[in-house]
Length: 173
Image (cartoon, rainbow, N blue to C red; front, top):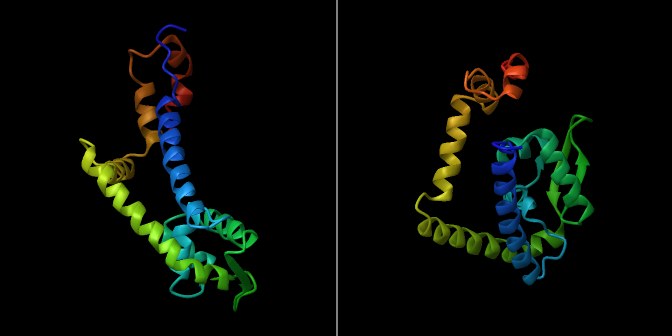
């Protein structure tokens, strides 16, 4: 298909780069003897290191949805890094670190510190720091969500025949 640009090309590349970096963090965690610990646990562990918290509080503190926080907590519980109990409201779940997780905090903190230093070194090597890029991208998407940008692009009169055929649907932001 001449001229066809896969819409997922950028997303695919970003995911691949993230997965590569995340896998390297995972290898560092394994080297520290933290079998079963996943890097996605770290934001939750940072909060729980200060004391128990509800899933709702964890979601707010880590900037994810309640569902995402709940899924991370469930994975942590399955892996033996956290426990859950019913809160004051039967719907509320209170989460806390296990004794094993508390004992591992020095190693987890060492990985956080080394990873932060590695990211700072990577940022210094790039012409446009990754940390700046992420913040700028977030701000741009807050100003105008990507779906609205897709709708505007669908209205471009230079669009392909496929875009013309689907302009009305694509234009509904």
